Image (cartoon, rainbow, N blue to C red; front, side, top):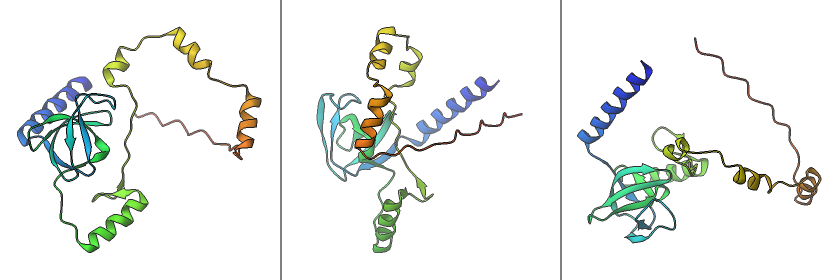
Length: 171
């Protein structure tokens, strides 16, 4: 039943986004338009600060966009402001700077972060155990005494952190 409900919601959301059109945005920092959502992907062109774009898709920390000139490619999402740009007043600029300093932005005053995991859902589903890679990862470890010496040289201090309580089961 849950899967059926989730499927219906996904279909409705997809239909709504088609009905309302793709999301718009503008570049807050100049960036290269890439052929794929990778730093080392082939550059297709450049987008300048302030260029208007249409956001087509998100993958990891990248947006697939279409520029006002019709060029299509991928840009880093941190270089994009979603939605329509608003003309800034002196008051809104001062408030914006204060919010930026506190890590808060937008009308909801929500702290925004970008999570980059490096693997998409399909890659995680098709992942397989690789003993050689596990051994390789384990080879990067160092003995405890060596780690302590390194920490002391860097004037790092140990801290005890309490475990989080297990979440209560839903009824």
